[in-house]
Image 1 (cartoon, rainbow, N blue to C red):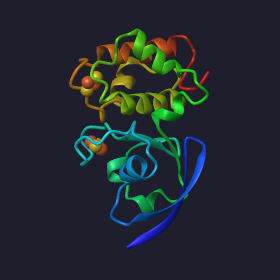
Image 2 (cartoon, protein in one colour):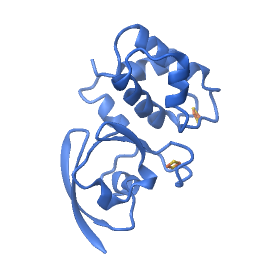
Image 3 (tube, rainbow, N blue to C red):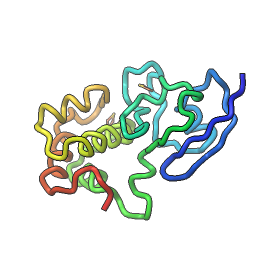
Image 4 (cartoon, protein in one colour):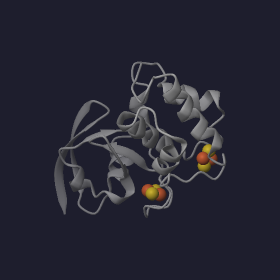
Length: 160
Ligand code: FES
Ligand code: FES
């Protein structure tokens, strides 16, 4: 079955015809060409597909396309809109929190949601916020340090 949906992605309104069994992840990647949300497990385990839906992190592989109708979606592409890296992106680079990079867009979005909600989280709160984002490479320490650095600088999760 086909549905017409409208959703705002990184500030741009899109009206699309989607298949009812397709996911938000498929819509973003295949219909809109937004490829930062990664296709990992496709069953809600890895967090590589994490985007913000109305400000909250979701696994886009678990959201059916019709469920995204009327929502506002943020992806990693939107973090550097305007040409400057978001403080979280800079901190991930500075702290070597990116290795293969497959988890990074999802990590960034979960981190942004955390800092938007809680500008000065404890280490436990950071680790709790990332519990749904798996990383095979970094051991998490560098990611946690990058987020702590942004919080300490008072830059929160917001763009410059
Ligand atoms: S691809 Fe969505 S949680 Fe793994
Ligand atoms: S940097 Fe490779 S999975 Fe996280």
